[in-house]
Length: 189
Image (cartoon, rainbow, N blue to C red; front, side):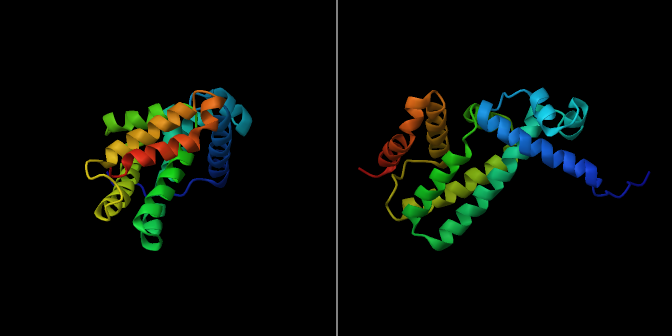
């Protein structure tokens, strides 16, 4: 049986999907990755069935929200590598990665992608980590970062920092200071 050609989604379906993503992003920024999907649908002005038609699982919704962020960070790594010296490029990219992991509960989701290659987020997260790894390698070649540091080490450290900042306003206020401490620990002795 021949496959039917794929058609673009109807305009109203695309508008619904876009509203769901916009409201999910806003709600998750406020409440974290475990925000109520019922609330997402309500705020988007769609029924729960419509939300589930577009995003059958919470992971599918997160993959759509975060996949775009990860792809932007992947491209950003290439831009920084071409425009900046290795050290500032890596520092800027890591700070932007930290900002992109701003949803409460996201660090646990990101760490889970390491263990589940079938995850909808795994491929885009892997590409992002590899892009950061290229920046790390360039900084290591210049002697700016310890040679024993791996891209996975950096990913885990920035995720840990994101998780720590998630634990309360006092720690969130110290995020940039803690980020500096992490960077100091990456430098050669």
